[in-house]
Each structure stands twice: as C-alpha cells, then as structure tokens.
Length: 330
Image (cartoon, rainbow, N blue to C red; front, side):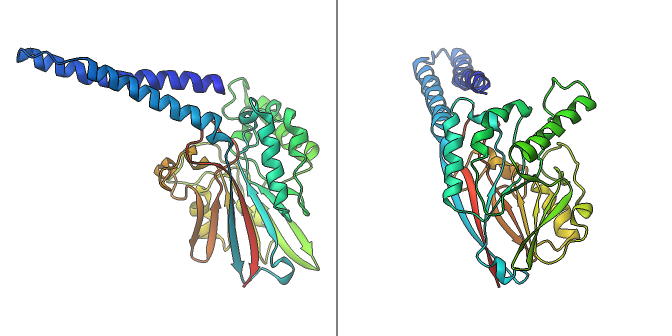
C-alpha cells in the first residue's frame, strides 16, 4: 500500500510541477511575439514550492493523519426502545481494511484498546474487513479478538469483502470460496456474529433489540457500482419492535430503507468520508447524498462512519472514527 502511495505521490508531483512550466511556456511564446523575454525563475520556484507543499501534506496524512482517532458520541432516542435498553451503548465501527496496518500493527491494537475503554454493550461492524483477501486479516487475529463488548460483535460484509478487486481470483468459484473464507474467519476465528441477509435478537430482562444485517447493497442514483448481494426483506423477516440495520453502503438507506421500511436506525460505512475533510466538507459528498455523520429524515436515522482503515494510506483532517451510540427510551 505504501508503494502505491509513493508512486501516486511521484506522479502527482510531476503533474503539479508541470503546471507552472506550461504557463511559463505559453507566456514565453506570447512574449516572444512581442519581443519580450518572460523570465523562467518565478515559475520554476513556484513549481518547486507547490511540489514541496503537496508532498509535505501527503507525508503528514500518511504518517500522522492516518493514525489519529476520533470518538463521535451520539444519543438516539425512540419510542420503541424499551426500558431494558435505555442507556444501552453501541460502538459503531467500519472499514478496517486491515492491510492499512501492515506498516504499523501497534496502531490497530491502540484502536482496539480505545474501543474497549468505552465499555460498549455491543459492537457493530459495517463491513470491509479486508481489501483483497483473508491473508490480510490473519496476522491481526489476536488484536481483533481483543475487542470486548457485553453482547459481542455483530458484523456484515462490505463490497471489498466480496473481493471484487482481487484480480488473482480467476473465476466466480474461486472468488466465492475466498468470500466464504472471510466469512468463516469472522465467525470462527474472531467469534463475531456475521449477519448475511438475516437478523439476530439481543434479549435483556425479557425485552428485545433486533439487529438486521445485509450483504453489500448498492443504491441507485449515487455512489459507484460495486456488488449487490443484499436481501432486505429476507433479513427483516419475522422482526418487530426496535430494529437496527447494518448495511455497508449508505446509498442503500435512501434507495430502499427509507421508502420501503420503518427501521428507525441504520448504520453504514463505505465512504471513508473520502479520507479528506475541508472545513467539514468532504469530496465524498460529490458521490453520496449521505457521505458522513448523522442524517435524520421522516423519523428514520442513518449514521455513516468514516472507518478505521484506508484504501490509500493517507487521511487529511479526517481521523479514523469510532462512533459511540447511546440508546434512550423516549
């Protein structure tokens, strides 16, 4: 991953350095027609300064910004939350992309420790454990098993967990076998409750909280095409009362959850908030109507988590995120 970033930084540096030179060349050609020589030095120094600034920003994002961790606290009140779950604490995490930590494994342990200090009742993981395959996850088995919550960890699969970007998997049979390996790793090695178009019930004092989980589901009209394996009607079958939906791609909320269900709270990830924020704005908002944070509409709520890992190892003013959600009876 760092190699890809270095190549990208080199290419970006070349492009940025070229821009002042193109401007100088055009100015020089125009000046020549008027018998005026445009000096090169200001343009050369500008190119150098731009490259230094861009490379410094990328270096900071890689070696500092990538390891910053933000805990976002959110209270969610609803009439269907029962007394037994009033004050119930859910930690929402997403997008581990475990190869992110290959050059600094201790940071993953630090993230896990930070989650445990919140003393959650439940941890919900909304997909993308890996980027290309189960081999990324195996070195981190011990660190991930450190996660502690009274009612355990519940997870779903994201688009990367379906390994659609792994070019070494030559056919659908190989791909499906590797996807199943990811699923079994979560269930058997980590002890997580992986929901694949199904639901599970948490019961306290005879009262119930239902967690509904779907495979990666792509909404229409926003985001980008990945893989669509969700079956929300099947996952919701037999459920009632207060329900929380785990679905990786936030575009699913507007395309199906809002128009077709009354699910009060949906948790998603996927966007990473583009790993860049400027004064609260993220480039992810160009593609996603719900790009990061909390959204409320028609009595339903979506929370989009910015993720813990990276697809490219740079975060600029966009820390890795843990969301602590406290349920309240209204």
